[in-house]
Length: 179
Image 1 (tube, rainbow, N blue to C red):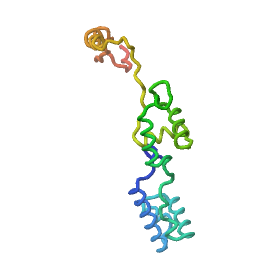
Image 2: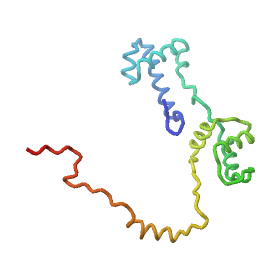
Image 3: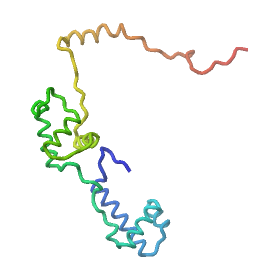
Image 4: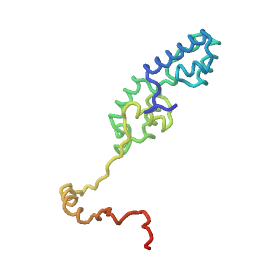
């Protein structure tokens, strides 16, 4: 199952799911069948079967939540340090321009924290912490903002192609043949 922003279940949702598994354990102890338990708990029969196997093997402890499936790539403390390094800018880290790319961030993480990530893993991690993809705006040095604003306001409306208007006779349906 996929979750938004690459995250897993929230702690509240994990507790909710654990309560359902504990309720299933009570039903197992009472002798309820898998299909009946699945219908009452509003889960799949396959999940109830899996829970019953875990319950038979380890009791209710086998149904307890084990926490998040995966730990974050960098701890909050390390990510805060990474943010400080990113705020210094690429030039401070020996880059010729002010553009952070995923490859440059990967190199920075490798040098600073001695960890290796894939580019997609770095992208997911950055999005999880609220960083967004940025594309630098490249504008000519000679650009005159006042002239551009005037052109857009005065000239562009006359150059722009007129929009197609729908009329009663401009239907895309086939017209009936004349008799």
